[in-house]
Image (cartoon, rainbow, N blue to C red; front, side, top):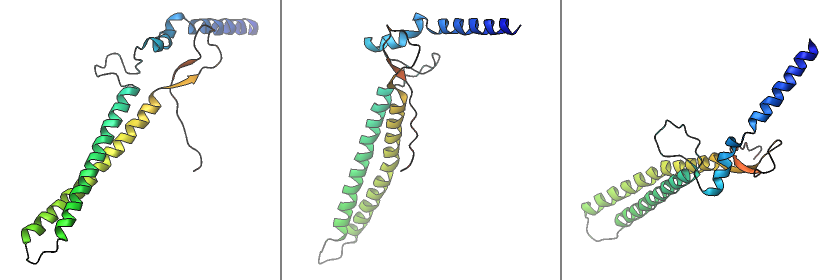
Length: 159
């Protein structure tokens, strides 16, 4: 009885190994060389494929918006400070009101840039985690490239 259970287990494992290496499963690996996009999204989901290029493009756009709002905030705050410290012989309350408004708008613009910078970093990390090329392990046929698409999770240890 023990021998028959062991034999059935070995036959089952051999059958599983032979089914795991069907030619149809290497379509994604072969499509990398032809330039077709590889997607990890569900087939019934109708949004655009969210791949490495999508997340990097979005990261770049958010970073541009973040730097632009930060730069505009610094310029507006600087102009407000220059108007406030203007040495004029007469008192002009409209200059002071404009200076306060410019300084406040610049501060709000600078604070608004923070979420854009955070989102740019988040999308860049998503892009890096989405696809990376890594060496395959044991059991890959000789005619298949050893560089295939994979997902990598890095956990930093220490500082």
